[in-house]
Image (cartoon, rainbow, N blue to C red; front, side, top):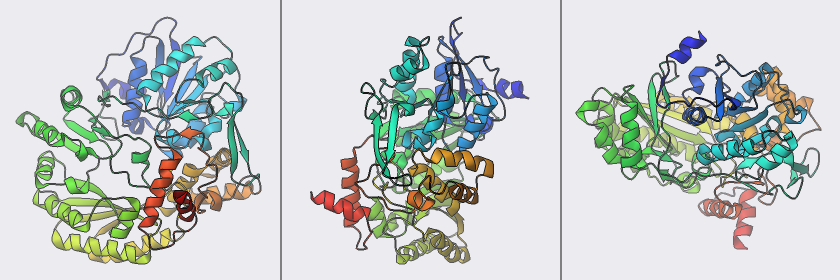
Length: 553
């Protein structure tokens, strides 16, 4: 079984032959092979390691693995979904390694992690890792391996202290967190010795060659797809959006020297092409890229596009996509209320959304999916009514187009201007209201689970004390009930669920990630927060009031 899965891979790079003294390294993805191999980040890091002759890399998934070294020196995890932490703990046990970094000794490998979840806020998971890589892997990974080689034969303590000097490398055990009270907010986060940097800066790759698939396989969740990263980050900067704020600045791959050669390489082995990025159609040369893919020689190519900015949906774009077997488009509108869109900095008007639907139908698409959000700070019941009215107008303007409205609950994310807000307790009722209103209109409503939003918020705003909770919930299962049960068991030892999830935090308190610097300083985030309030006639309590005072200063 295992070998046939790896045998069906078509590699788009040439692995190196490892030296006799190469570092034995396991690179794991904490989910099944079909999911892991569909992650472009995982593919690229694995290929980068496999092309080095000073590393011998073996892959590990929850269901299969390559032949693993008897004594690995380094084990890495790429994490793109929060709840996969359960599988990290299971895989560490499978490898007979203590799950807490504090219990490992000189005989254990160094455990590192990277990926969007850990870059945003690694603190809930910090106690399980020796080393965390913050930011883009392009330069960070090489710097990590080079620094490790220098101290390969040194003590674990020396290794960790040396690695902590490398920009973007965070060693949690070298930082001490103090709390206002056992179940209170964070009081301070300081390095345990003067040679350790007080702030770890996320690393940003600034080149104009972005990622592309390094392997194509029919065993991937998206069968035989070849993925090309067209843009990184998003220029829109919606104030709740991690994909934009955490990955700034907006970067685009060069059409001539990067995108076209990458696409040509991939289309030699498959006819399925995926264009990735938070805002693909905002690439300055996107039309030229479409013209290139529209050539007759690519007539059998099936094209998928990650997400499209609403006001770039032209009839021409849709026709090209329809010819390339795309049946549906996804656009993020967030809300039908102009006020809410101003609060979150979504530069979009209802007439542009309606026009996008008209163009989608005219260009030959069968369905359109819109993404929205409930419980955005400042949202009132009438804002939801405006979302329903907007969906009705779209249906009227583009009859026969199948409409789906996907809706999640607002969840605060670290390093964004809305990180100080809690989850709105009314959000679940608001999702139910939308469901009730849209279903009779023949609009398919797909809400994301409110309970999952609660867990997501806990992990996105959690501090290190959460690790004890995560160990407990792992035995209880991953429902919200399990988390509540674990909170009950830890009562008095950590803050309650309410503190992490629903409370609005003061803009003056120390955040769990205050020692980790994202692309924008806190002063800029506060300025963006204050701008958001100026659009709201509603008192959006606490963090807003604090930020107004600060803005005046």
